[in-house]
Length: 308
Image (cartoon, rainbow, N blue to C red; front, side, top):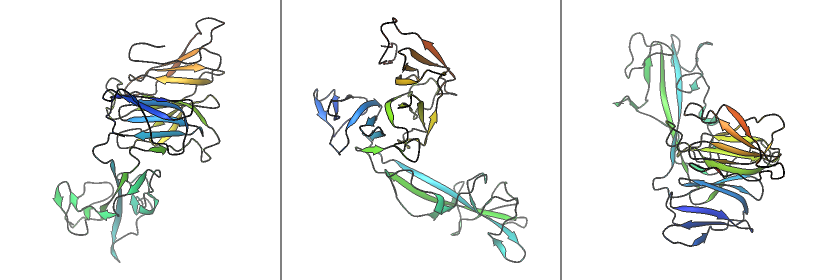
């Protein structure tokens, strides 16, 4: 399927098959069937998000010209002692032998795993031999007086600690295919999804590469998928956005500006307020009553300048 970002609309039929309609072709084209039927689809830029017949969330990434490749980093830390020289025997107050750059979190190489089945390792762990543009000796160590401090390529008389950077790259291989997004719980069937909507790519001042993916579970809870970017298409985790007591949600819609409208079980609407670049999930809800007592809302759609 040769789709160009921003040039197609997407739909799902009563059999759960997904279709695209592009400007160039002017006709509906069916996605390759991979054994999954879908209930909802929503799209932005070069991604399509969907709720499957199994009530799990899926993402489809297309139109990627440059492979999505992410660098994983960990730092190996050592301290000098008069008996052994530099070694992994650190002080109780020191950072761990392998840690993040700030030394605040342990990060053993063996603990760094692929986030989902959509990724594969592109190489093995290896030492970075560049430091601020300077080529380091083969070992890749840099030296400092203590943790934390400024590190230098050469060992000095006062160098009591050293560290080196380890790198490994992973590559996203699920382009032009549906990829399952991890659920809220370890057991994906514990809280199934019933709706999903993607938008938020044009929040004023916001991160250009970030999207906001909002969803609804069968219990009426509203969830946001965090960390959805160009280099992390499936995001990093789910965040619950509480609604007012007794106002469970059945469906929602997200605008490019990040504005969110949701339909409650009672047929009224909730509007998310306070959406900004600093708080893209907003700060509070405002309820909008149903059009008439006998006409509860069932579906809402938010565009650039209109709500239907």
